[in-house]
Length: 377
Image (cartoon, rainbow, N blue to C red):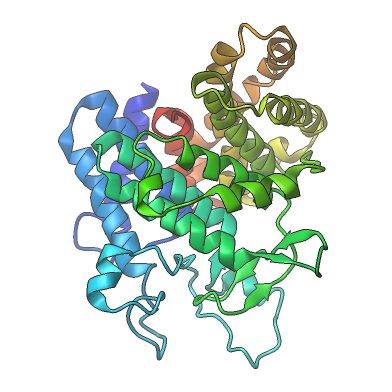
């Protein structure tokens, strides 16, 4: 039943956002990363090749829209500056735009923190989501191009978003960069960006067919992200942030127990801090507000993360310490059922609270209902 609902939601998204049908393409990097994984999961479940085609068509649209300058920008072509031929071969070398409704402000304009939420640019944590999506496509198709594009994006993101505060000083990350990656738009550091960077770069490096022979080296990125994570504290009260911790934990658990990575301590820390975060969130009034006062995609991020607990439980079953932590985490799984049930009610998906973020809400509800395409490496 849940898989059929997820399929219906993704069919709706494909048509309304211009992957199929006559609607003009409407691309947004975060949403599309989840959507690619959802289409792959439906393909795996149904063996219907049209869903694999949807995933590949969406990747192509993202690269040719978000990998290029906006239509309302005086600049044209690939944001990397590559010519057409090289841009086709390396569509992620310049990063990928977020896909916001408004163009970015010019370099001589003062930054408006409120306006930044609606202006285009590049986010590191959106780029890592796309790296994961490309890695999933590479695994499903056995086509190394997708893994190459993911690793090229990782190298570009690391070079552009990471900086040293002073000679010998600590490493930091920029939260938002300009479209061409030439200047920071918001120079504060995202709470979980180094963690996302570490887990995703490890995912790519340990993937089947990793292209180490193509002069692709993720070692510097992994080392820098590990340094920034060394004294990290990840607990958060934000449901989307908690879901992100679980997302990183399930991927890290797969790499530790299936690929032999020695990151057991980091995995234990993630699980402990997720449990403390959930303990606080469980008493939050957010889930008892009206639909108009709630942000579905933030709650659904938590629900998706909680869906990954079944995979983590199986992976850590022979480690008594981790199994005990996961046992505590499993008691919060009912939150996922509660979130899904609320947003599956048609009336809750008709108001402005849902419709203002319709694409991202629809796709992330689909991921929560059928998470296999997203959470498995």
